[in-house]
Image (cartoon, rainbow, N blue to C red; front, side, top):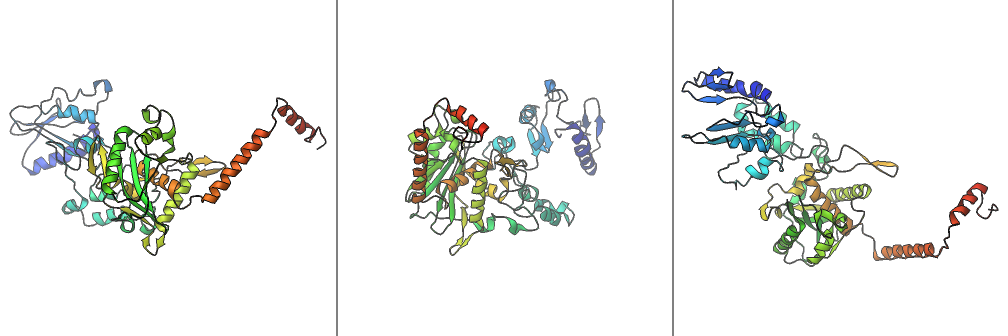
Length: 447
């Protein structure tokens, strides 16, 4: 089957019949019960699973006793329908097998998260990946070159369409990645240049950036060098984890990976300073401080204008060349995903994936003052690592004010507040201002 009955009849049934004919098996179709009968008496049901009436969502399946199930394009299948179909493997006297052939789903799909993880940790479940090269013997000679031209290395769909790997979920124009397939050099971030082993410099502070959210809490570690370079040395991405559970894991990996650090300076999302943020008592910043994180934040970090400026500054690191090499580097090893309390190495590396193609511009602009400004799309996955990178630049990057500038700004703010408080306000102030507007002057009409 496929999920849609129309697709099952038009796309799946013809090749099934062709395969039977090649094998010398003549099928007899029984339209009343929607099955092919084989010469040995076996039945092969052929119908789509999608119900016309959601009140009878499983009516097509219930009552079947099956020995084997094959679902094509299984990424279309809702998980609850899959589980119901799985329960139909109940025919006695035969071995049971369930086969699914999906197009590569994204990392948040139930096939990837729960049923078929890449490490094959699920008992009695096996995940196989097939690239376009593995199927070359079934294809015309020009198919693979055409696909490579349409989806070159670094493009959004290269992983799924060519390599058969689980795909990036975002769709749109990459913020830092390749925008023109004909010109790969147009990308600010290029894995071949910017991704490699990045050792920790023990003479520089370790900068730590945290983004909140129960679904995907995130931390990214980096160092800024005196040569105007940004070195990203690792990170963690949580899944369905509260901050109380994620913070000790951050501490563990920080000590495991960076025991020789000079010092740790920590920043976070400004939303963490709001009371009752992320469904907790108090706020996330207070919780982190109670757990030993000396955390700081800037209130304007999430404003569209500031975020756009930070993206420009980060792209500047990626295009920069210094006497020591690239101005921007991302480590290719220290990346872990944590689901529940189970950590697994992130083979694809969520931050580099986002930089390459997953972090994309939103189709809608946002108004800032009198200008229309681009904003990145909030996709629920890649945005977390990218936001951590933006907070790092905003709090610790090269465009920080000097002590002299900060002191001068604080003095001007204090002076403005003093003059405001010294102004003698009374209920007649508004009346006097209105009278001045009518008479054209500020002192009883005498200007």
